[in-house]
Length: 513
Image (cartoon, rainbow, N blue to C red):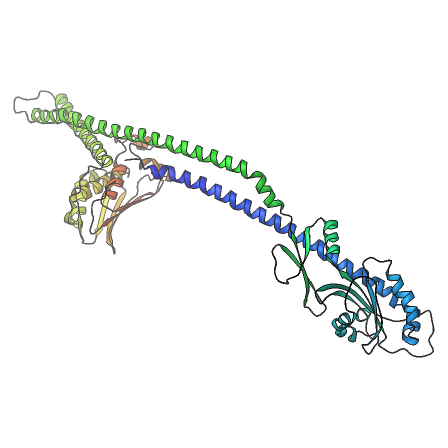
Protein backbone atom coordinates (compact mmCIF):
# COMPACT_ATOMS: atom_id res chain seq x y z
CA UNK A 1 0.00 0.00 0.00
CA UNK A 2 1.40 3.40 -0.98
CA UNK A 3 2.45 5.39 2.02
CA UNK A 4 0.52 8.64 2.46
CA UNK A 5 2.79 11.63 2.99
CA UNK A 6 0.08 13.82 4.51
CA UNK A 7 -1.10 11.08 6.86
CA UNK A 8 2.41 10.79 8.33
CA UNK A 9 3.65 14.37 8.27
CA UNK A 10 0.54 16.47 8.80
CA UNK A 11 -0.09 15.32 12.42
CA UNK A 12 3.45 16.40 13.36
CA UNK A 13 3.10 19.69 11.50
CA UNK A 14 -0.34 20.42 12.99
CA UNK A 15 0.83 19.48 16.49
CA UNK A 16 3.85 21.79 16.22
CA UNK A 17 1.77 24.72 14.95
CA UNK A 18 -0.85 24.06 17.63
CA UNK A 19 1.83 24.09 20.34
CA UNK A 20 3.27 27.36 19.02
CA UNK A 21 -0.17 28.99 18.85
CA UNK A 22 -1.04 27.70 22.32
CA UNK A 23 2.23 29.11 23.69
CA UNK A 24 1.56 32.49 22.04
CA UNK A 25 -1.99 32.50 23.44
CA UNK A 26 -0.71 31.71 26.94
CA UNK A 27 1.91 34.47 26.71
CA UNK A 28 -0.68 37.00 25.48
CA UNK A 29 -3.05 36.01 28.27
CA UNK A 30 -0.30 36.24 30.91
CA UNK A 31 0.81 39.65 29.59
CA UNK A 32 -2.77 40.92 29.60
CA UNK A 33 -3.35 39.70 33.15
CA UNK A 34 -0.06 41.19 34.37
CA UNK A 35 -0.81 44.59 32.83
CA UNK A 36 -4.38 44.44 34.11
CA UNK A 37 -3.16 43.71 37.65
CA UNK A 38 -0.67 46.58 37.45
CA UNK A 39 -3.36 48.98 36.20
CA UNK A 40 -5.73 47.98 39.02
CA UNK A 41 -2.91 48.51 41.49
CA UNK A 42 -2.27 52.02 40.11
CA UNK A 43 -5.97 52.84 40.33
CA UNK A 44 -6.04 51.64 43.92
CA UNK A 45 -3.05 53.83 44.75
CA UNK A 46 -4.73 56.89 43.22
CA UNK A 47 -8.01 56.23 45.00
CA UNK A 48 -6.17 55.98 48.30
CA UNK A 49 -4.27 59.20 47.55
CA UNK A 50 -7.40 61.20 46.70
CA UNK A 51 -9.34 59.73 49.60
CA UNK A 52 -6.45 60.72 51.84
CA UNK A 53 -6.61 64.37 50.61
CA UNK A 54 -10.34 64.77 51.29
CA UNK A 55 -10.11 62.91 54.59
CA UNK A 56 -7.22 65.10 55.77
CA UNK A 57 -9.25 68.22 54.97
CA UNK A 58 -12.24 66.74 56.81
CA UNK A 59 -10.05 65.96 59.81
CA UNK A 60 -8.95 69.62 60.05
CA UNK A 61 -12.53 70.78 59.53
CA UNK A 62 -13.85 68.48 62.23
CA UNK A 63 -11.16 69.59 64.71
CA UNK A 64 -12.33 73.19 64.33
CA UNK A 65 -16.08 72.46 64.26
CA UNK A 66 -16.24 70.07 67.20
CA UNK A 67 -15.31 72.79 69.69
CA UNK A 68 -17.21 74.75 72.31
CA UNK A 69 -15.54 78.01 71.24
CA UNK A 70 -16.85 77.50 67.68
CA UNK A 71 -20.40 77.21 69.08
CA UNK A 72 -19.94 80.33 71.19
CA UNK A 73 -18.03 82.54 68.75
CA UNK A 74 -19.75 81.53 65.55
CA UNK A 75 -23.27 80.41 66.47
CA UNK A 76 -24.02 82.59 69.48
CA UNK A 77 -21.91 85.69 68.73
CA UNK A 78 -21.06 85.52 65.00
CA UNK A 79 -17.62 86.90 65.87
CA UNK A 80 -16.06 87.26 62.43
CA UNK A 81 -12.78 88.60 63.78
CA UNK A 82 -12.38 85.41 65.80
CA UNK A 83 -13.21 83.38 62.71
CA UNK A 84 -10.55 85.19 60.73
CA UNK A 85 -7.93 84.55 63.41
CA UNK A 86 -8.90 81.06 64.52
CA UNK A 87 -9.90 79.61 61.18
CA UNK A 88 -8.53 81.57 58.22
CA UNK A 89 -5.07 82.28 59.60
CA UNK A 90 -4.67 78.68 60.84
CA UNK A 91 -5.26 77.23 57.36
CA UNK A 92 -2.08 78.82 56.02
CA UNK A 93 -0.07 76.11 57.80
CA UNK A 94 -1.71 73.41 55.67
CA UNK A 95 -0.61 73.33 52.03
CA UNK A 96 -3.63 71.30 50.95
CA UNK A 97 -6.20 73.84 52.35
CA UNK A 98 -6.89 76.98 50.29
CA UNK A 99 -9.93 78.47 51.97
CA UNK A 100 -12.70 78.39 54.59
CA UNK A 101 -16.43 79.09 54.35
CA UNK A 102 -18.93 79.35 57.23
CA UNK A 103 -22.56 78.65 56.23
CA UNK A 104 -25.48 79.70 58.46
CA UNK A 105 -28.29 77.17 59.02
CA UNK A 106 -30.44 79.08 56.53
CA UNK A 107 -27.80 78.54 53.81
CA UNK A 108 -26.38 82.08 53.70
CA UNK A 109 -22.65 82.72 53.89
CA UNK A 110 -21.54 84.06 57.28
CA UNK A 111 -17.81 84.21 56.54
CA UNK A 112 -15.41 83.18 53.79
CA UNK A 113 -11.66 83.23 53.35
CA UNK A 114 -9.64 82.34 50.25
CA UNK A 115 -5.91 82.04 50.91
CA UNK A 116 -4.80 80.56 47.57
CA UNK A 117 -6.11 80.36 44.01
CA UNK A 118 -8.88 82.13 42.17
CA UNK A 119 -12.32 80.61 42.60
CA UNK A 120 -15.85 81.86 43.31
CA UNK A 121 -16.99 81.34 46.92
CA UNK A 122 -20.61 81.64 45.75
CA UNK A 123 -20.06 78.87 43.21
CA UNK A 124 -18.67 76.58 45.92
CA UNK A 125 -21.57 77.24 48.29
CA UNK A 126 -24.05 76.79 45.47
CA UNK A 127 -22.52 73.42 44.55
CA UNK A 128 -22.63 72.29 48.19
CA UNK A 129 -26.07 73.78 49.04
CA UNK A 130 -27.88 70.43 48.95
CA UNK A 131 -25.14 68.84 51.05
CA UNK A 132 -25.18 71.46 53.82
CA UNK A 133 -28.98 71.66 53.91
CA UNK A 134 -29.15 67.93 54.62
CA UNK A 135 -26.69 68.06 57.54
CA UNK A 136 -27.99 68.00 61.14
CA UNK A 137 -27.07 66.87 64.63
CA UNK A 138 -30.04 64.62 65.32
CA UNK A 139 -28.48 61.48 63.91
CA UNK A 140 -25.01 60.03 64.09
CA UNK A 141 -21.83 61.96 63.35
CA UNK A 142 -21.91 60.85 59.70
CA UNK A 143 -24.75 63.33 59.13
CA UNK A 144 -22.64 66.17 60.51
CA UNK A 145 -19.37 65.42 58.69
CA UNK A 146 -18.96 65.09 54.91
CA UNK A 147 -16.02 65.10 52.49
CA UNK A 148 -15.38 64.63 48.80
CA UNK A 149 -14.85 66.45 45.53
CA UNK A 150 -16.83 68.86 43.36
CA UNK A 151 -16.24 70.48 39.99
CA UNK A 152 -16.61 74.26 40.18
CA UNK A 153 -16.37 75.99 36.82
CA UNK A 154 -13.82 73.43 35.60
CA UNK A 155 -11.75 73.53 38.80
CA UNK A 156 -11.55 70.47 41.03
CA UNK A 157 -12.23 71.24 44.69
CA UNK A 158 -11.59 68.85 47.58
CA UNK A 159 -13.69 69.73 50.61
CA UNK A 160 -14.47 68.77 54.16
CA UNK A 161 -17.81 69.95 55.65
CA UNK A 162 -18.56 69.68 59.36
CA UNK A 163 -21.38 71.20 61.41
CA UNK A 164 -20.39 73.23 64.47
CA UNK A 165 -21.19 71.38 67.74
CA UNK A 166 -20.04 71.48 71.37
CA UNK A 167 -17.50 69.13 72.80
CA UNK A 168 -19.10 69.25 76.26
CA UNK A 169 -16.58 71.36 78.20
CA UNK A 170 -18.71 74.51 78.34
CA UNK A 171 -22.24 75.00 79.65
CA UNK A 172 -24.52 77.13 77.51
CA UNK A 173 -27.41 79.14 78.94
CA UNK A 174 -29.72 78.22 76.07
CA UNK A 175 -30.63 75.04 74.31
CA UNK A 176 -28.89 74.47 71.00
CA UNK A 177 -30.95 73.75 67.86
CA UNK A 178 -30.51 70.68 65.67
CA UNK A 179 -28.91 72.75 62.96
CA UNK A 180 -25.89 74.96 63.60
CA UNK A 181 -23.48 76.77 61.26
CA UNK A 182 -21.34 74.58 59.00
CA UNK A 183 -17.61 74.88 58.37
CA UNK A 184 -16.37 74.12 54.86
CA UNK A 185 -12.61 73.79 54.45
CA UNK A 186 -11.53 73.28 50.85
CA UNK A 187 -8.47 72.89 48.67
CA UNK A 188 -8.01 73.33 44.93
CA UNK A 189 -6.76 70.21 43.10
CA UNK A 190 -4.50 71.87 40.54
CA UNK A 191 -2.37 70.21 37.90
CA UNK A 192 0.75 70.92 39.96
CA UNK A 193 -0.72 68.98 42.87
CA UNK A 194 -1.80 66.19 40.52
CA UNK A 195 1.72 66.00 39.11
CA UNK A 196 3.14 65.85 42.64
CA UNK A 197 0.78 63.00 43.52
CA UNK A 198 1.90 61.10 40.40
CA UNK A 199 5.57 61.64 41.20
CA UNK A 200 5.13 60.48 44.79
CA UNK A 201 3.12 57.42 43.71
CA UNK A 202 5.38 56.44 40.82
CA UNK A 203 2.62 57.00 38.25
CA UNK A 204 3.77 58.35 34.90
CA UNK A 205 2.25 61.53 33.36
CA UNK A 206 -0.74 61.84 35.70
CA UNK A 207 -2.95 64.66 34.40
CA UNK A 208 -6.48 65.99 34.75
CA UNK A 209 -8.74 64.76 31.98
CA UNK A 210 -10.36 68.06 31.13
CA UNK A 211 -12.76 66.43 28.66
CA UNK A 212 -14.72 64.05 30.86
CA UNK A 213 -15.23 60.72 29.12
CA UNK A 214 -12.22 60.96 26.81
CA UNK A 215 -9.77 58.32 27.99
CA UNK A 216 -6.65 58.10 25.78
CA UNK A 217 -4.73 56.21 28.46
CA UNK A 218 -5.51 54.63 31.79
CA UNK A 219 -8.20 56.59 33.63
CA UNK A 220 -9.68 56.98 37.08
CA UNK A 221 -12.78 59.00 37.96
CA UNK A 222 -13.83 61.08 40.98
CA UNK A 223 -17.54 61.54 41.75
CA UNK A 224 -19.27 64.24 43.76
CA UNK A 225 -21.74 63.60 46.60
CA UNK A 226 -24.66 63.42 44.14
CA UNK A 227 -22.98 60.70 42.02
CA UNK A 228 -22.01 62.99 39.15
CA UNK A 229 -18.52 62.90 37.65
CA UNK A 230 -16.39 65.59 39.29
CA UNK A 231 -13.34 64.88 37.15
CA UNK A 232 -11.23 62.17 35.60
CA UNK A 233 -7.49 61.61 35.57
CA UNK A 234 -5.44 59.83 32.97
CA UNK A 235 -1.89 58.63 32.91
CA UNK A 236 0.50 56.34 31.09
CA UNK A 237 0.04 53.01 32.86
CA UNK A 238 2.99 50.84 33.65
CA UNK A 239 2.89 47.75 31.38
CA UNK A 240 5.44 45.22 32.61
CA UNK A 241 3.91 42.49 30.44
CA UNK A 242 4.27 44.39 27.19
CA UNK A 243 7.72 45.54 28.27
CA UNK A 244 8.68 41.91 28.77
CA UNK A 245 7.40 41.04 25.28
CA UNK A 246 9.55 43.82 23.78
CA UNK A 247 12.56 42.37 25.57
CA UNK A 248 11.96 38.79 24.41
CA UNK A 249 10.53 39.39 20.93
CA UNK A 250 13.91 39.06 19.20
CA UNK A 251 14.83 35.76 20.95
CA UNK A 252 11.30 34.53 20.21
CA UNK A 253 11.66 35.32 16.51
CA UNK A 254 14.99 33.49 16.47
CA UNK A 255 13.37 30.53 18.23
CA UNK A 256 10.52 30.48 15.69
CA UNK A 257 13.06 30.57 12.88
CA UNK A 258 14.86 27.60 14.44
CA UNK A 259 11.55 25.74 14.73
CA UNK A 260 10.70 26.62 11.13
CA UNK A 261 14.07 25.44 9.87
CA UNK A 262 13.71 22.25 11.93
CA UNK A 263 10.25 21.65 10.49
CA UNK A 264 11.52 22.24 6.95
CA UNK A 265 14.41 19.83 7.55
CA UNK A 266 12.03 17.29 9.04
CA UNK A 267 9.65 17.59 6.10
CA UNK A 268 12.50 17.16 3.62
CA UNK A 269 13.80 14.11 5.47
CA UNK A 270 10.26 12.76 5.77
CA UNK A 271 9.71 13.15 2.02
CA UNK A 272 12.99 11.38 1.33
CA UNK A 273 12.26 8.60 3.81
CA UNK A 274 8.72 8.10 2.53
CA UNK A 275 9.97 8.00 -1.04
CA UNK A 276 12.53 5.36 -0.07
CA UNK A 277 9.93 3.37 1.86
CA UNK A 278 7.48 3.65 -1.02
CA UNK A 279 10.12 2.45 -3.44
CA UNK A 280 11.00 -0.42 -1.11
CA UNK A 281 7.33 -1.29 -0.75
CA UNK A 282 6.87 -1.36 -4.51
CA UNK A 283 10.03 -3.44 -4.90
CA UNK A 284 8.74 -5.89 -2.29
CA UNK A 285 5.37 -6.13 -4.02
CA UNK A 286 7.02 -6.63 -7.40
CA UNK A 287 9.34 -9.25 -5.95
CA UNK A 288 6.49 -11.16 -4.30
CA UNK A 289 4.43 -11.10 -7.47
CA UNK A 290 7.36 -12.17 -9.66
CA UNK A 291 8.52 -14.86 -7.23
CA UNK A 292 5.01 -16.23 -6.76
CA UNK A 293 4.46 -16.34 -10.51
CA UNK A 294 7.80 -18.09 -11.11
CA UNK A 295 7.06 -20.63 -8.38
CA UNK A 296 3.51 -21.28 -9.53
CA UNK A 297 4.59 -22.23 -13.07
CA UNK A 298 6.74 -25.25 -12.09
CA UNK A 299 4.34 -26.05 -9.24
CA UNK A 300 1.50 -26.49 -11.72
CA UNK A 301 3.69 -28.95 -13.57
CA UNK A 302 4.44 -30.83 -10.36
CA UNK A 303 0.75 -31.06 -9.51
CA UNK A 304 -0.20 -32.08 -13.05
CA UNK A 305 2.40 -34.78 -13.34
CA UNK A 306 1.72 -36.08 -9.82
CA UNK A 307 -1.96 -36.44 -10.74
CA UNK A 308 -1.01 -38.30 -13.96
CA UNK A 309 1.26 -40.62 -12.01
CA UNK A 310 -1.53 -41.21 -9.49
CA UNK A 311 -3.91 -42.13 -12.32
CA UNK A 312 -1.37 -44.87 -13.37
CA UNK A 313 -1.89 -44.10 -17.08
CA UNK A 314 1.69 -44.99 -18.03
CA UNK A 315 2.18 -47.76 -15.48
CA UNK A 316 1.24 -48.95 -12.03
CA UNK A 317 2.61 -47.33 -8.91
CA UNK A 318 4.02 -50.12 -6.81
CA UNK A 319 3.82 -50.09 -3.03
CA UNK A 320 1.44 -48.43 -0.61
CA UNK A 321 4.13 -46.08 0.67
CA UNK A 322 4.75 -44.74 -2.83
CA UNK A 323 1.03 -44.05 -3.24
CA UNK A 324 0.98 -42.38 0.21
CA UNK A 325 3.96 -40.21 -0.69
CA UNK A 326 2.31 -39.30 -3.98
CA UNK A 327 -0.81 -38.09 -2.13
CA UNK A 328 1.37 -36.06 0.24
CA UNK A 329 3.07 -34.43 -2.75
CA UNK A 330 -0.32 -33.50 -4.21
CA UNK A 331 -1.67 -32.23 -0.85
CA UNK A 332 1.44 -30.16 -0.13
CA UNK A 333 1.47 -28.84 -3.67
CA UNK A 334 -2.14 -27.69 -3.47
CA UNK A 335 -1.45 -26.04 -0.10
CA UNK A 336 1.60 -24.28 -1.53
CA UNK A 337 -0.42 -23.18 -4.55
CA UNK A 338 -3.08 -21.69 -2.26
CA UNK A 339 -0.39 -19.74 -0.39
CA UNK A 340 1.10 -18.47 -3.64
CA UNK A 341 -2.32 -17.40 -4.88
CA UNK A 342 -2.88 -15.48 -1.63
CA UNK A 343 0.47 -13.74 -2.01
CA UNK A 344 -0.36 -12.83 -5.61
CA UNK A 345 -3.75 -11.47 -4.55
CA UNK A 346 -2.13 -9.40 -1.78
CA UNK A 347 0.48 -8.08 -4.21
CA UNK A 348 -2.21 -7.06 -6.70
CA UNK A 349 -4.20 -5.36 -3.96
CA UNK A 350 -1.20 -3.41 -2.70
CA UNK A 351 -0.27 -2.42 -6.24
CA UNK A 352 -3.86 -1.31 -6.95
CA UNK A 353 -4.15 -3.74 -9.87
CA UNK A 354 -6.89 -6.00 -8.57
CA UNK A 355 -9.91 -5.59 -10.84
CA UNK A 356 -13.49 -5.88 -9.59
CA UNK A 357 -16.04 -7.36 -12.00
CA UNK A 358 -19.40 -6.25 -10.64
CA UNK A 359 -22.52 -8.21 -11.56
CA UNK A 360 -25.90 -9.09 -10.08
CA UNK A 361 -25.45 -12.09 -7.78
CA UNK A 362 -27.69 -14.02 -5.42
CA UNK A 363 -25.84 -13.55 -2.12
CA UNK A 364 -28.00 -16.12 -0.32
CA UNK A 365 -27.00 -18.79 -2.88
CA UNK A 366 -23.32 -17.80 -2.69
CA UNK A 367 -23.30 -18.15 1.11
CA UNK A 368 -24.95 -21.58 0.90
CA UNK A 369 -22.37 -22.75 -1.68
CA UNK A 370 -19.52 -21.68 0.60
CA UNK A 371 -21.12 -23.51 3.52
CA UNK A 372 -21.48 -26.68 1.41
CA UNK A 373 -17.79 -26.54 0.47
CA UNK A 374 -16.86 -26.51 4.16
CA UNK A 375 -19.32 -29.18 5.30
CA UNK A 376 -16.90 -32.12 4.77
CA UNK A 377 -14.36 -30.50 7.10
CA UNK A 378 -17.10 -29.73 9.62
CA UNK A 379 -18.34 -33.34 9.57
CA UNK A 380 -14.79 -34.60 10.00
CA UNK A 381 -14.32 -32.41 13.16
CA UNK A 382 -17.89 -32.96 14.43
CA UNK A 383 -18.71 -29.25 14.11
CA UNK A 384 -22.27 -28.08 13.52
CA UNK A 385 -22.84 -25.30 10.94
CA UNK A 386 -26.14 -23.41 11.18
CA UNK A 387 -26.97 -20.99 8.36
CA UNK A 388 -29.95 -18.61 8.43
CA UNK A 389 -29.78 -15.94 5.71
CA UNK A 390 -32.30 -13.59 4.11
CA UNK A 391 -32.57 -13.62 0.34
CA UNK A 392 -30.74 -10.71 -1.28
CA UNK A 393 -29.30 -9.58 -4.60
CA UNK A 394 -26.21 -7.40 -4.70
CA UNK A 395 -24.17 -5.83 -7.47
CA UNK A 396 -20.66 -7.04 -6.69
CA UNK A 397 -17.85 -9.44 -7.59
CA UNK A 398 -18.94 -12.99 -6.70
CA UNK A 399 -15.39 -14.32 -6.94
CA UNK A 400 -14.17 -11.90 -4.26
CA UNK A 401 -17.22 -12.42 -2.03
CA UNK A 402 -16.75 -16.19 -2.27
CA UNK A 403 -13.07 -15.88 -1.32
CA UNK A 404 -13.97 -13.64 1.63
CA UNK A 405 -16.57 -16.08 2.94
CA UNK A 406 -14.34 -19.13 2.41
CA UNK A 407 -11.43 -17.48 4.28
CA UNK A 408 -13.62 -16.63 7.28
CA UNK A 409 -15.31 -20.05 7.32
CA UNK A 410 -11.99 -21.91 7.00
CA UNK A 411 -10.60 -19.92 9.96
CA UNK A 412 -13.71 -20.70 11.99
CA UNK A 413 -13.35 -24.44 11.22
CA UNK A 414 -9.61 -24.37 11.86
CA UNK A 415 -9.86 -22.83 15.35
CA UNK A 416 -13.08 -24.45 16.57
CA UNK A 417 -12.68 -27.68 18.50
CA UNK A 418 -14.64 -30.91 18.12
CA UNK A 419 -18.29 -30.57 19.07
CA UNK A 420 -18.27 -26.81 18.46
CA UNK A 421 -20.75 -24.71 16.54
CA UNK A 422 -20.53 -22.19 13.70
CA UNK A 423 -23.53 -19.93 13.19
CA UNK A 424 -24.03 -17.88 10.01
CA UNK A 425 -26.73 -15.19 9.91
CA UNK A 426 -27.48 -12.95 6.92
CA UNK A 427 -29.75 -9.93 7.46
CA UNK A 428 -30.91 -7.19 5.06
CA UNK A 429 -30.22 -3.62 6.22
CA UNK A 430 -30.90 -0.24 4.64
CA UNK A 431 -27.62 0.15 2.75
CA UNK A 432 -25.81 -3.11 3.49
CA UNK A 433 -26.37 -6.83 3.66
CA UNK A 434 -24.91 -7.94 6.98
CA UNK A 435 -23.39 -11.41 7.33
CA UNK A 436 -22.36 -12.54 10.82
CA UNK A 437 -20.18 -15.64 11.25
CA UNK A 438 -19.95 -16.68 14.90
CA UNK A 439 -17.91 -19.63 16.16
CA UNK A 440 -17.24 -21.23 19.54
CA UNK A 441 -13.51 -21.53 18.94
CA UNK A 442 -10.47 -20.52 20.97
CA UNK A 443 -11.00 -16.78 20.49
CA UNK A 444 -8.42 -13.99 20.63
CA UNK A 445 -7.49 -11.00 22.75
CA UNK A 446 -7.57 -7.48 21.28
CA UNK A 447 -3.81 -7.56 20.85
CA UNK A 448 -4.00 -10.90 19.05
CA UNK A 449 -6.71 -9.54 16.73
CA UNK A 450 -4.34 -6.71 15.73
CA UNK A 451 -1.60 -9.23 14.99
CA UNK A 452 -3.96 -11.42 12.97
CA UNK A 453 -5.05 -8.42 10.88
CA UNK A 454 -1.47 -7.63 9.81
CA UNK A 455 0.01 -9.34 6.72
CA UNK A 456 1.82 -12.58 7.63
CA UNK A 457 0.84 -11.99 11.26
CA UNK A 458 0.41 -15.22 13.21
CA UNK A 459 -0.60 -15.65 16.83
CA UNK A 460 1.94 -17.48 18.92
CA UNK A 461 0.59 -20.46 20.83
CA UNK A 462 0.65 -24.25 20.76
CA UNK A 463 -2.87 -24.65 19.38
CA UNK A 464 -2.48 -21.90 16.82
CA UNK A 465 0.89 -23.09 15.56
CA UNK A 466 -0.42 -26.64 15.15
CA UNK A 467 -2.36 -25.41 12.12
CA UNK A 468 -0.83 -24.53 8.77
CA UNK A 469 -1.17 -21.02 7.35
CA UNK A 470 0.69 -17.88 6.37
CA UNK A 471 -1.35 -15.27 8.22
CA UNK A 472 -2.77 -13.77 5.03
CA UNK A 473 -6.41 -14.78 5.43
CA UNK A 474 -7.76 -11.92 7.53
CA UNK A 475 -5.58 -9.20 5.90
CA UNK A 476 -6.88 -10.32 2.50
CA UNK A 477 -10.47 -10.28 3.73
CA UNK A 478 -10.00 -6.78 5.13
CA UNK A 479 -8.57 -5.48 1.84
CA UNK A 480 -11.19 -7.28 -0.24
CA UNK A 481 -13.99 -5.71 1.83
CA UNK A 482 -12.45 -2.26 1.36
CA UNK A 483 -12.20 -2.96 -2.38
CA UNK A 484 -15.92 -3.79 -2.44
CA UNK A 485 -16.70 -0.68 -0.35
CA UNK A 486 -17.85 -2.97 2.45
CA UNK A 487 -16.79 -3.23 6.07
CA UNK A 488 -15.49 -5.95 8.36
CA UNK A 489 -15.66 -6.05 12.17
CA UNK A 490 -14.12 -8.65 14.49
CA UNK A 491 -15.18 -9.28 18.07
CA UNK A 492 -13.36 -12.06 19.87
CA UNK A 493 -13.05 -13.38 23.42
CA UNK A 494 -10.45 -15.98 24.48
CA UNK A 495 -11.95 -19.42 25.20
CA UNK A 496 -15.40 -18.15 24.13
CA UNK A 497 -15.24 -17.63 20.40
CA UNK A 498 -14.98 -15.14 17.57
CA UNK A 499 -17.65 -13.19 15.70
CA UNK A 500 -16.85 -11.70 12.30
CA UNK A 501 -19.34 -9.25 10.81
CA UNK A 502 -19.26 -8.52 7.06
CA UNK A 503 -21.32 -5.69 5.57
CA UNK A 504 -21.71 -5.92 1.78
CA UNK A 505 -23.14 -2.90 -0.08
CA UNK A 506 -26.07 -3.62 -2.43
CA UNK A 507 -24.45 -1.56 -5.20
CA UNK A 508 -20.72 -2.02 -4.78
CA UNK A 509 -18.26 -0.12 -6.92
CA UNK A 510 -14.54 -0.36 -7.28
CA UNK A 511 -12.48 1.52 -4.71
CA UNK A 512 -8.73 2.01 -5.22
CA UNK A 513 -6.67 1.12 -2.20
